Length: 283
Image (cartoon, rainbow, N blue to C red; front, side):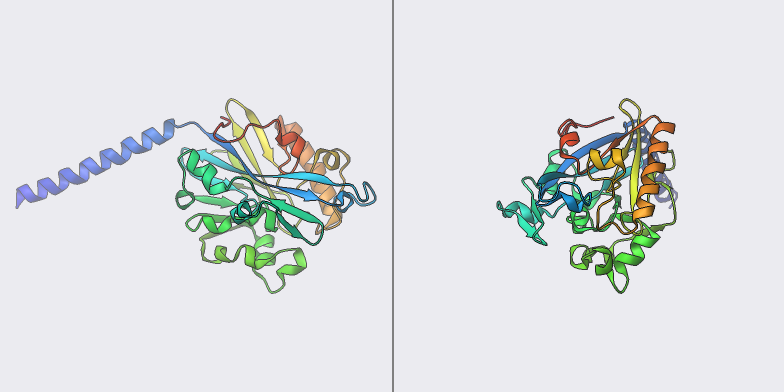
């Protein structure tokens, strides 16, 4: 009997040691940020993004999404255009205004660096427009991190009023969710923080990442879609709240200055051309 008890205690002790060793190993892993190509959007009339300017001009926007690897877990930031578009070389046209294309799937890019969607801990979505939730269904275990206004609009009685299409994020109803009412420090050490930045949609948010070697980066969501709009604080015609959008951009500019941070505009094709993509990473 004693031998059995001692054997059981020994097994438990070894499990505890193994868990401690795993935790210590994890704590030595560096913070990393991977950038994925999650599609491109050809805009047939760019004036919808800055009314009165560029009527009839075309412009291509990037669609980027990201993986944050932290000693305490993993986070996908935005889920891009749906991987299914990779089977449509001609792309898909929406509202006779946007042609959306995907050349390499998000799932394939994740596998390339040794991650599978099922293992991701958190899914942070800047807002619920279709070009940011396209692959949300790939992450069934991830805890959805969303501002309360965005959640209410997306899962309320009239999501179409905000430009949301529930069919693009239907699977998220089954995900665990943490509804937020402000900034949120995801891992509790100030390195990966959701920033409440309203205006584009009712509960829009951005992601602030403090990398020890690269420096401080604010991932924009749709705070602005390209550099010209950011510099001149111009607001797309379809934003939820124009005045709030301008105010938020001004506040974000002050935040960047105060924290010696740079803004990565997720849809800015020209800026994204200078940002290295996975399997390379920033640390």
